[in-house]
Each structure stands twice: as C-alpha cells, then as structure tokens.
Length: 372
Ligand SMILES: Cc1ncc(C[n+]2csc(CCOP(=O)(O)OP(=O)(O)O)c2C)c(N)n1
Image (cartoon, rainbow, N blue to C red; front, side, top):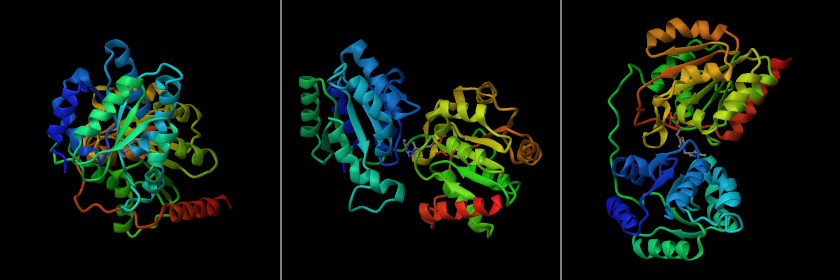
C-alpha cells in the first residue's frame, strides 16, 4: 500500500502540484488528500473528465507546468475528444499526467458496468497515444519516468491505479444541513409514484437505494431503469422513454450527474413531452464515490431548471415538504423538483441482484404491455 501523503508530496517535488478531475471510489483516498491539502486555485473538481483535460491544457498555457487529471476509467470516454483534438502531439502537443482508477481490472470482481471498461483500459490508453504505467508500491521510479517522458515529448502519460493502492484518508464531510438522507427522500417520493409510472434513476447509490426500496416494499423492479453506468445521461435516457411512451417517466438524477452533461438536460427540458418529470437529488457532493463536493451548493438549481425550460420547479428540504409538494409536482406536466438531502448512506447498502440485461428486458416488457 502506498502512503497517500508521501505520494502527494513526491508529486509536488516533481512540480506536479495542480489537479483537475472527477472523483472515483477507487481513488477516494488520494482524491480526499488532494481536496484537503491542495490550495483551492490548484485543485478543481470538474463537471466531467473532458473539462479536466481542457483545464489542464489552459493551466499549461499559462504556466508551462504539467497538471494531473484524475478520473475513474469510466471517464475515459469523456476525455477522448479534448485529448485527441487539443492535447495531442498532432495538434497543440500539451502534456497532461492522468491518474486513472482501474475499476473492473481483469481478474478482480466488479460490477457489470465496469467489466468491459476494465478490460479495455490499457488498450484504450495505448490507442489514444498515452504512455501508460501501472502504479506500484515502489512508485518513485514510475513517477520519475512519466515526468521525464512528458517533459521530453510534451505528450500525455497515465498512471493506472489498482484497487486498494493508497492508504486511508478520511474526507471531513460538511455537517448535516438538511433533515433527510437521500434514501429517506427516495422512500417518501416513491410512495407517491404509482405502479403505472416509470423511474429512471441515476448512477451510483441512488439506483442501489431505489432497488432496495422496491425489495423492501415487495414491489416489482419492472418499472425502473437503473442507470448503473453512463453517468450524466439519465435525463436523456428518461427523455427517450418519455417521448416514445405514454407512461409518466420520473427521472431521478444526482447533482453531480446533472452537472456532468448539463446541456443534455436543457435539450430534455425543451423537448420534454407532458409525461416527463425531472427530479434532482442535491447533496452537493459526489457521495457515491467518497463525498467530494460538486459546485451544486454554489449554484441556484431552481433558477437553472427554470432557465432550462421546465414548466414549474419545486424545491423540498423535509419529508413534510415532500408530502405537501410531491403530489403537485406529479400532476404538473414537465415539472422539475429539487430535493435537498444530507450526504450519507447505509453501510450495508447492497447492489442490484438483477443484471442490467434483466433490468432492460423487464422494463421493455412493461412498456410493451402498456402500449397495448
Ligand atoms: C463518466 C463517469 N465518471 C465518473 C464516474 C464515477 N462516479 C460514479 S457515481 C459518481 C458520483 C455521482 O454524483 P451525484 O450524481 O451527485 O450522485 P451522489 O453520488 O451524490 O448520489 C461518480 C463520480 C462514473 N461512473 N462515470
């Protein structure tokens, strides 16, 4: 196991002291250390991984220094365009040091959405022309070689990180500001969602909680689409269903997911049919992967959603608010709801026991039945 502080200090000694990225559960400890120790102008948690590459390039233009971009391997797709059409040697030739969390590493157990990504992580980086190193206990020669290579060629390099590589760092979470947890809010809202409606829930613990609430209520999962991967695309999936079905579709998003592809939500709002309802659970954080903050609490979500074109935006902060406002929200075509919750989840929260393929089949059956 690598001492997280020592690794951070070693990067700094090599002049890598600026960080941009989207947090990852596997990089949780190093992300927590960076969040708590890098000065605010040298660390930005970005909306998506592509933004982080662009920020690193901008930073290089102003300083001539190499920045680090951290990401889960699920975010490799988001970096492809700025990597290939901005940083690449055939374009601006700007070095970036990636630190990539290797979910789904072959030979390890992981969730279905990580398996393919894990298998193709090294070959993807190779195809993208990124010189790649796997981080090992003896990390100094690896960092030295990566830095030497980037300085010589001005090309990007990546350090791929296996599960359990870094020593524990506890991220100090903000004190609770609201009265409910995400799971309590979900339970309360799902009581109001009838068995003819569809739920499309976002990546991370939200979908895991939706699944377990159904189990506890002895309810079928056939009306839910659990977006286990593809963070940021929940609203577009929900729009796709809503446009082609008569069912009411409740999209349950997270603040990090909403911000990751905010443009998609604008398109969804403008094109939403009457049966589309949008809910964002705002805990101001990437709670599912360690609780690193998003910028959500510095933004006005109500105004953003109004500006995007939702017909009416409700805000709820308590279970009583949900009892009062959810029925109105449900009746109002193209409405949106912002739900403020504290961070946190049960330690024994499980994962869906059905596969993504089973989830798809049963939802499609449900939607087909209802078309008749
Ligand atoms: C493209 C991509 N980047 C990063 C991740 C890792 N990841 C999974 S859930 C999550 C946080 C989601 O935050 P939010 O939508 O606010 O929901 P919360 O976890 O707070 O409930 C992240 C970063 C991912 N799955 N996909």
